[in-house]
Image (cartoon, rainbow, N blue to C red; front, side):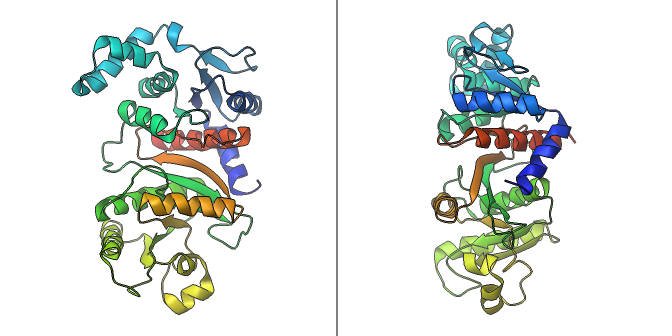
Length: 326
């Protein structure tokens, strides 16, 4: 799709990053890896059993025979000893492709990882959280989807950041503020624009009263206190957030209403349902869930993904890795 995604791919090509892909037996991953290498977007590293035909320009690592397996097992043991992990369990974990890819990222052998074509979101993110872990200053690791719609009048040239749609089930006000803050950073990185953040609800600026709305309003206050220059508003209904005519009647004077490009959902139920409705009924592309707040990027895919999705999420991962290194 032209526009935002093409720009991300172009910028990723310039970043020169190595992306581990621990689903070496999936044909979609193989196709994406071949294209990524041919196009010079990233240096793909297939992690797992060697495919029957290794694409040209694609590096392969078999965890079971890796010369770094014992080293990685020791790293995993130290990271998870508090969970009761012993040496044998650590060795088995390090030989598993998903965990091995995360250990490659942790040790600097790869700059980021992409998985989820065959693994669940829970499996993919568990490996990342256990091994790569959150940045020192981050209290709440979260996820977002990059949503791209044909109608360029919406969001930023048709693109939005939707969060959290994949990880934090019931964030409190402080966690919701953390999610919004990281999502604003992701908007700057991927969309290349000034974020306009809408904290969503079923109410707009006090049009209803319920304990669930207090959390959203408090999150907005926290975020405004932490980042006074950030363009943020809430609580807002989604139509007030993205439709100028509705914003004029429901949220007059708001700097966000009618022009939001970052939509923050009050909980995972709303976020997951919301992005899928926009994708399936609205015809938008949905890339993610993309993780934000880790020390290095490790991103997820839908198990229904296409090779094009894998290709584009790898490009997003490369940009995140470049940002972390600055």
